[in-house]
Length: 215
Ligand code: B12
Image (cartoon, rainbow, N blue to C red; front, top):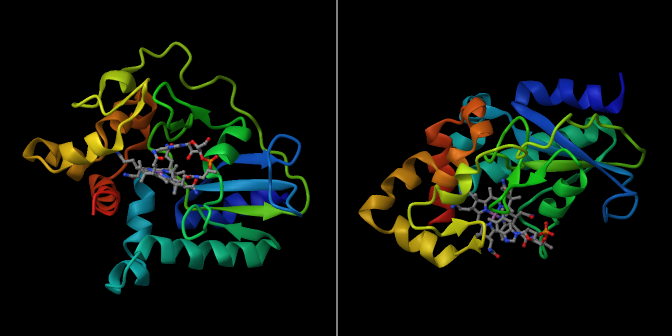
């Protein structure tokens, strides 16, 4: 089995998928890393898998970050790779830039990352850095080509458009009664992406992340 097939097989029961691979010749990768494979939650299966974990149930802070470290550190050990996380590092590891360098993830009209499989629900739980090159097939088409761009007008207070993200305006709306829909079902912009529809993310997962964002 190649490194990619082996990782995909190990990631599948964890409800993670390989969202893309960044290569040293296209990305600023950490020393010693030739290929970096990005791991993303795989639709509604992810929430079902995560909520059965000890971390989700133990009542301690940051359960998803602790779960991610446990399972992705174990993948790194099994595959002889080095694990990187989008949280807990100062300064943060540049996941956004790494994602764009894969050629499998794209900047949407609103700037956030969009993926052919996950749409705007794309996020990362970690990445594995390998000391050897591992090729990852590229998608046939870029996700936003020919799209009517519903993401640009979906935010009820225009806090996120193709002119940028007004974070204080987003939080102010979430403080109002009308913001309850975004808090309990997730960001309206991310939900509006046609590709997000097929990813079928659980509302409970969106509410979990929105609580974290808006705490
Ligand atoms: C800081 C941060 C934020 C800040 C942004 C503040 C700002 N505007 O400057 C805040 C707290 C607002 C934020 C919010 C969210 N974020 Co955020 N955030 C990060 C974080 C931890 C660090 C970014 C950074 O500074 N990198 C350092 C520089 C050097 O690296 P870089 O990759 O080159 O950085 C580029 C990007 O950060 C980009 N950028 C700048 N501002 C913003 C804002 C957002 C929201 C995004 C997506 C990108 C982005 O420009 C930078 C230069 O090219 C990254 C994780 C990571 N390690 O990268 C996640 C990350 C970018 N965020 C992510 C997510 C999911 C969110 C939320 C949607 C969380 C949620 N609710 O689920 C929210 C938005 C709330 C909502 N309405 O739903 C995802 C990307 C999602 C996507 N599809 O694009 C990341 C990759 C985390 C992950 N685990 O997957 N975030």
